[in-house]
Length: 208
Image (cartoon, rainbow, N blue to C red; front, side):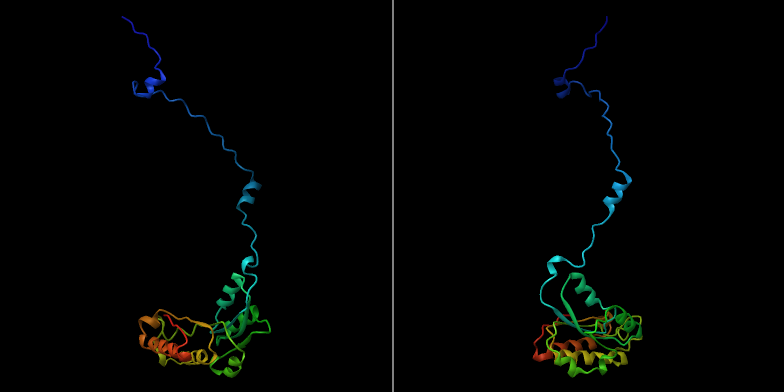
């Protein structure tokens, strides 16, 4: 007896009459690689503009920056494209002083080597300040320091910073320091916050 093989119909494959339909080899995909010059162009970032166009206009932000360091406030405002006028800065570190004069001296912003010895009356007489910042010395409060706290001579400038806020009354202020001021020197932090909240008869909302 002999049997003749027949072809299965599509309906039979569809309803599972035959367990598996012989698979046809998939056509090979041909991926055309771009030329080297094309790949180079695709990886080149778009040119950067000096400042975002939507911030090129607007009011001038006037700042005073004590313990200015690397002048992060000016970097941030310039990066945002804000109109920025620095009225005065201070820093006692000679390296910072050299850096600032090499990069930011414009003949308008006045530099004070020591904020505890500057002419506060002159600063107050300059008028309203939009943003006042001070990153007062962290060594007295740092975990890697000697934990001198308020007794460390470098912490003496804190009283001068608070005094300027009380007399100059900037529209807003930002004071920065290390975590140790909170975790290891809470009594000093409490004193600072008390003075700041009482500045200008309680005109400021102080958050820490």
